[in-house]
Image (cartoon, rainbow, N blue to C red; front, side):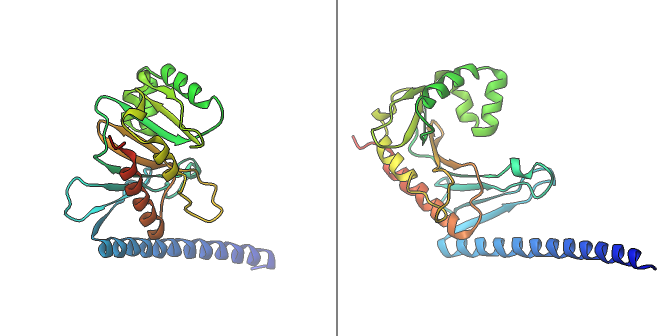
Length: 239
């Protein structure tokens, strides 16, 4: 074997070795993460359930109180494990609970996106109020939002709340929008992080708080659950 062939062989061997090491590291890291989640759930009296889907689908895990029935649930969808489209599927994290709820209605509170965006969003919601549009919105934001697209209007957010409010009727009659906005803006998962505050959705099915990325380690999971419980408690207006 000449020197050039030897160099090619060594480069190929190093590539294979590096790839194998990366696979082993990933497997060990995933096992350690699942063990840490299991330990967190056991310490808090929660149940941790991991669901591994097919190679073309993102996996997910669910955390909920142990034996508490239909109380609250955290569902985290992880990014795809591989492939060219990984970056377009950052995952999602959603805290759910049956109350508060809004029968036959929908309220969406999210971080403000700029002047006039709420009105434009309401207009776009109307344009998407068709079979294809509802299917697209339901897939990305949930069937609850798709169901009410044609009725969504923009409502003025409380001054200084830095929030955008879309709803089927004036949400201030039932919910404390200022308190919700203040709570979701307290979400700072990492120091200096530019990740946005969560979106809150309240409808007939109950309360949801969502971010469009994976909350993927025990500390952040605990913080996200605590924030969900906090927002749930301040959401309903005392009357």
